[in-house]
Image (cartoon, rainbow, N blue to C red; front, top):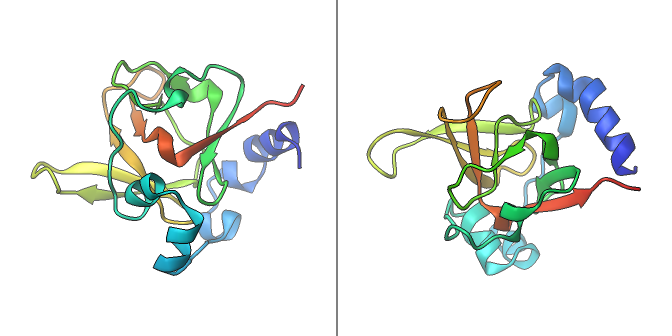
Length: 155
């Protein structure tokens, strides 16, 4: 399926209508050894061990083409490029995610609770969700660029 067809499906199909992630996208569960084989050490540290890459290390911070940002582990589209904004934080940031494509949980690693989000298909950690983003949502999905892949729009 080309990116144009994928984008149409995402914006008009069941996944965008807030169907549950299980019904709309399925799940991908692999052994720890399989993840280590499939991912680079940095991707593994972020996705499977909930690590964080250093700021300003991802080329995707400066990615401004039209397309889709997807999970590097399972290729699930997470953010259309139209949701991206420059947060000034050094990580790719988005004001919303495709409905049903991320799941959240509370993270207490820094003592104060934060909202952590994961890919709904493979469970990989992508980043944290903050309430300091732009309109229309006021949200900031602060994503580790090492665990995203960018698929530019065809043509």
